Image (tube, rainbow, N blue to C red; front, side, top):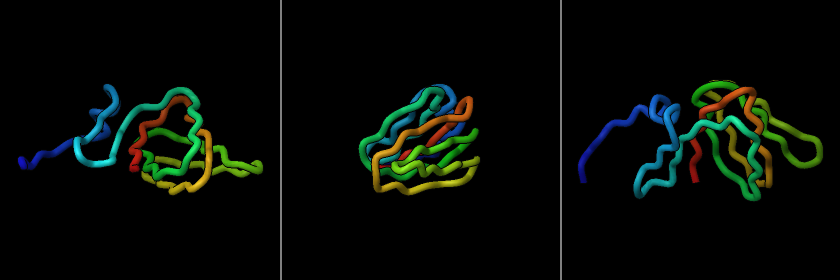
Length: 86
């Protein structure tokens, strides 16, 4: 297999990026999204509020990450570029 280098932030600003054979996806989020299952997110750019059950939430800023095990809602503050694993 060939080695390669990706600039995920730059590519994700232009459109969704997936790496074949690796459960990683980078994309720009500008609208709220509901997720039924958990996940791992690394915020590459912007700000993101993650709405959790029972009135709880997480507020991520650039470079911060969160691992979730329950349903949640992703709420970008204007726009967010995410790296999602899993």
